[in-house]
Image 1 (cartoon, rainbow, N blue to C red):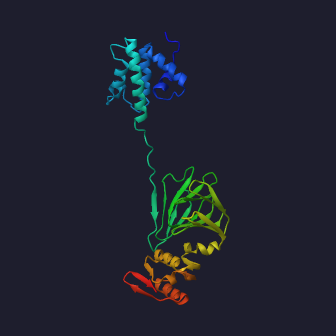
Image 2 (cartoon, one colour):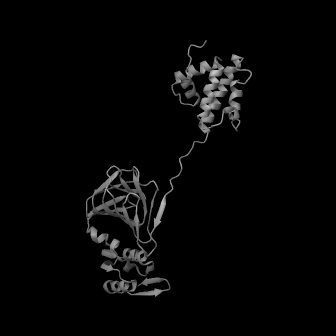
Image 3 (cartoon, helix red, strand yellow):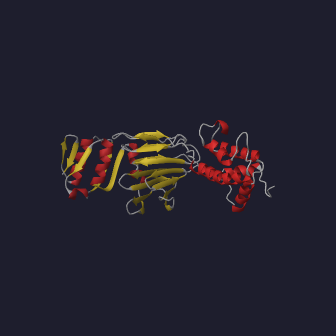
Length: 322
């Protein structure tokens, strides 16, 4: 009789590959090789088989693995390990087979999250109310994505472009806005994230934290502060701004404060759904300070051309500035 006799829980765990202690494994293998109580060994192996996800009884399983296990172990309905020498050899094969089965058997994968994407068409800002009651204003040509189970432990948004967020307060459920490699973390606040040519986060009220690619804290923002991130260099700059003016587009007003002409044109392209091309490198560096409240595009272009000293013409669907 073997000195060591495992109980059903321990033996089943062994067949499931869950025993890591070398001494325990050696004792169990010696017990199996002794050929004692083959029916008990088989019942534990069947329990381990059921744990692999095969609901059917092993004898009725559709694939050949179970029968191979039984043959290698010397277990049949009529004869159960009559020869200890054969049983010991079969046990080694059984261990290899069971380990291979458990290791290579495809593991069930969790279902992929079904992200729902909301896009604002070029020329049209879009309002969105999230499941938790938070309000999002999406800049024309931009989009936000969230999962249907959004209103759970963590509220997460993926942003492509630019959007303004007015977040419902829920201290126990952080609100995350992911844009590329960076994440803006908030509790309850009003802020804007612009992830087009560079990442810009502007805080109107409350408090937000900017996180890096690995979740490390980069900086915290207070109301009327703005952080601009150079995504290529990985550096950032924090400064004070007039947040109301920076986010005035949410009320239909475009405000530019010493912005480069090419940046202004990028905004106008999305806001008015038009193509604008700047001919001449010198014009790219011109700085623009202006406000436009619900004006048609021709009026905007006339004002810009007079204040910035350039001309423009229409070429089919493109405005050319020269």
